[in-house]
Amino acid sequence: MLSSSFLTGCKKDGLLVKSKSTDSTVTTLATGSAYYYITPDNNGNLYALGYGGTTIYKYNGNSGKTAFYTLPEIASGDSTVVNKLECLTSDSLGNIYTVSVNNSGVANVLKITQAGSASTIFSNIDANNGHQIQYIVSNNGNFYFSDSNGIFKIAPEGSPEFLVSSISADFAVDKNGNVLYVTYTSLNNIGEVNLNQVSAQGVKSALVPDLYNTGTNAGFGTETPLCY
Image (tube, rainbow, N blue to C red):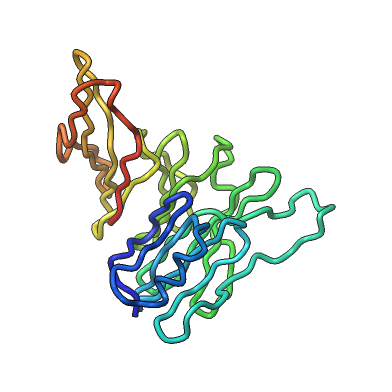
């Protein structure tokens, strides 16, 4: 089986996945060089969404690469034709989640079972902002996503609830439902990256102040990925 070191929901543009062992399946994944999103399931399988954004592939240590889910084609004359899939994550039951985006900018969340059956569980999740969904997480029945405005939470049968602003689209959710994210503060031209938390009850707190000190504002970059 594939290594459990692959982290749920993590996104790397133009990702090259390099083998940490002699696992030929992982090496096969690296040859494409155009896999933007990856996520594992709880059985050690790896899922990858390619550059075209229409097919999710499944990689298994025994059976190799197979097409797990392909976006249905819709007539080009339809004003709501789906253009592509974005983002990947999974839950403890092995269900895969992705975001389908149509040419009107409407973003729906799809849940795909291990059998490859897809259903829409949330529709038009970013209707108020109209920004690209950048990162997603599923945790204990709740769904989380981020865009350029910040991090949102959707409870089962609920609507998006704004949680917090963050300097990075990446965030993590631990087993207790705490959302971990980063902020940036500047004083006297010294930049500091801080690790923060929003509890499951909505309480905000600083976990690690001055997690990273840039020494100067000019040396600060916003790419601070968090995976759990």
